[in-house]
Image (cartoon, rainbow, N blue to C red):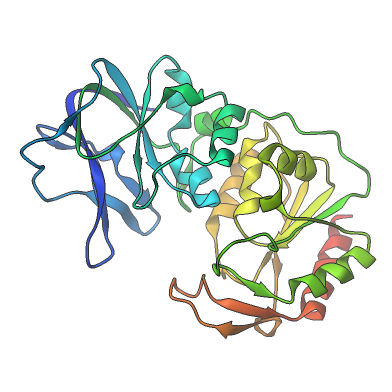
Length: 314
């Protein structure tokens, strides 16, 4: 994988255009460094800024830095996108890391620092870019993960640093969304489903109420992990191998290739559980292509296909 070295660069703040397009990037005198942009399967999510920089810019400390990427607070996007250059950050462990925060991000969260510690990226290396800032020299690496498209082997090895716990025979774990804040992907009546699952021997786990380490211990020690498909499943990226069978339940998002991309690269068993449309009735329509809608969950319509899938893998 490539990693370029560039002299006299300008790291620019994130700008959001009225159209909703995000713009930022790291620039030389010749223009934007393409690997500093953030791409997804549908195009460029963070594109190059087109406006000229201000007459006076900030000046970073002297020396050589490495570009880390864009600091996001959403758990899944942090794992998949903020850390998409982790392979290079580990390789060049002596260099301080410049991160460009997304709009509204002003500091690191505890769980983010915990993840960085787990994958061997020292929390003492981080520099949050504040304003358009000039740096003498910067390494900019090829991203190791692109949403719903690519996952490079070197990047998989860089993220997968945590040894899984021994499997507990018969342990089946449901990843509850009960600890989610805000309305994105909100579910009404999930507690009724969880009560039925417990009566069938499932354990209920709320990731948001635990440390990342505890989350990894719980999922890696289970024979089967299920839940409404979401970011909590992507935590397996941090395991050096996966013994657990994952059974994501798809209803909120009709198709999310990230689940397949991660499965294929890490080589674990995954059984997709598709719900009928009637299992989740939209009771409050959201803006983000429906992803932030609130849905009323019908427990019986989830339980039956889930238990059927469980029989297939047991």
